[in-house]
Image (cartoon, rainbow, N blue to C red; front, side):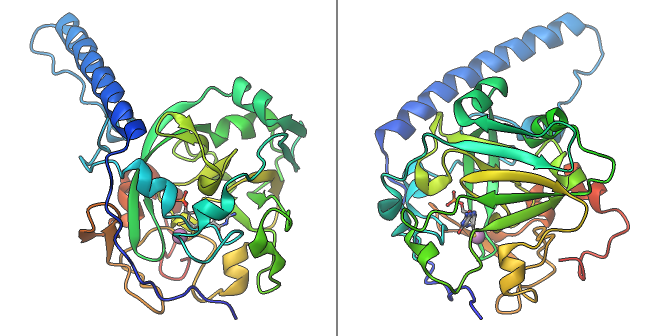
Length: 320
Ligand SMILES: Nc1nc2c(c(=O)[nH]1)N[C@H]1C(S)=C(S)[C@@H](COP(=O)(O)O)O[C@H]1N2
Ligand SMILES: [Mo]
């Protein structure tokens, strides 16, 4: 049985590179503009009426150079050079180099299964049809490290809506490209390639679940899952499947690569939960890439207010 290696957990220092500096500058400007606009709105409301406090959900979207908890963005260098992508390498520092030149055009994404309106999209058409917005999300890997990443993406729910789920549809299954010529890791038979993942339909329709095509204001590099990957910020990072070619609605809970390999270590739900340890390590805290500091891991990765309703009445210790 394949299990994740024990981690060396090498700290990579964030470096000041141009794209990131440019990015931060631009965001700082937008942030100022947003504050001015908000002040105008409050002024218009007037009187003693309290300006409606933005919900946490609203602030999840963007604040510029921090997430809504005030945590700094992880540097572009780290986000693009410390990657889990087993199709290329088991070594996080090797992925970027091996993924260089990975062909992301032409690319199609097939949406099918239990839907009234199945469709195969060319990636350019898909990104044109569903406008990309910025979402700053924490990414918490099951290996107990984390990052804060400004993604560009669109809500998975919008694509599902267009597909028109049949009433029998209860789950969504995602599949990564299978191309052993381009992805050396897929030549190893120790994994049930291609990588697959799944969500319950209502999880997939939650507005925090996005399909991302870019980060830091630029199209994604191959190591981050170009041209299109899932981002589900309240679940462990392995749910956020990269380079998706197929999205299918199903009636049965789909098999997923990690739960097929090690069901006692990686459940279908994989919600970030500091109270449920991995059998081989604690999940109570995490190391933030960039500053290297340990911080407590938050229930649902800090998105409990938005997503805990999805799991009302469920035992999250057995449904891990
Ligand atoms: N197809 C595919 N998707 C994948 C993986 C992978 O190995 N293959 N690794 C997952 C894991 S374990 C994590 S933590 C995130 C890492 O995303 P990042 O490299 O963009 O930070 O991608 C996830 N998506
Ligand atoms: Mo991960």
